[in-house]
Image (tube, rainbow, N blue to C red; front, side, top):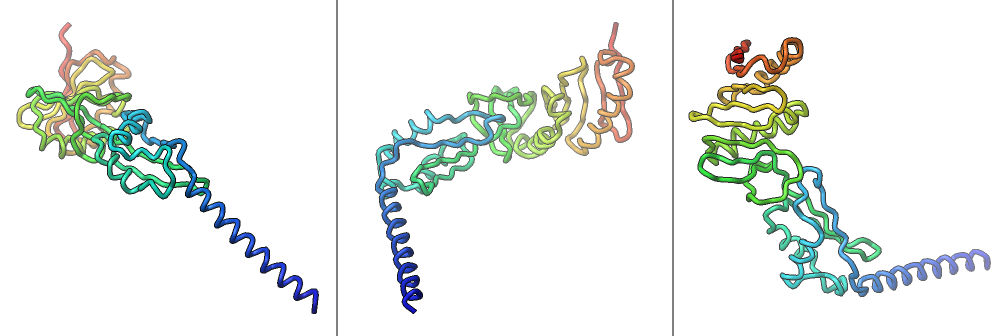
Length: 246
């Protein structure tokens, strides 16, 4: 009986100690000043616009830098709202770890096309079909869209075509320029091969380019990539080639 009472009392004391220790450690962590900002930036392969120096500067200018402040003095919601206003940031999540470290996780906007039209407009279209400002640091190749490009066409039909290119490793590497002619007719400038691809309207482009890829593999690989100056895939089940003048 005494042994059972002793074990019961010891268990209560251990639980009480653990609760008190946890409470003490949490209080100590909450009152501990933030020494550093842990910044996690995703999608740096595709973009690379935002760095820790810029984020720190934004927080300092807005008077909400967490450095030197305790957990009680820092509003993660306020940090997220300020950083989400950045033109090149898609999403921000701020959170504290159990050890008291403050993490800021940033997802950047990913450009998929760069528009440089005949109206002297220069901007990017991102992976959500929204316009991004020009003058950004873009570390990856993006197809240039030239010619008669209205913004309504850019954020709709061209955006969908850009998503297709981005998700297709072959054509994403092959297409260097997209030229839009009057009437929304499209021609493509490839990286490999000295020819122009006439696509026509942006309809059934997946089937058109699939047919062209087959022609590349079974035709141009045999007769040479510089034999034709123009390859027309506008009409279903046809490929019309214009021979290069010698």
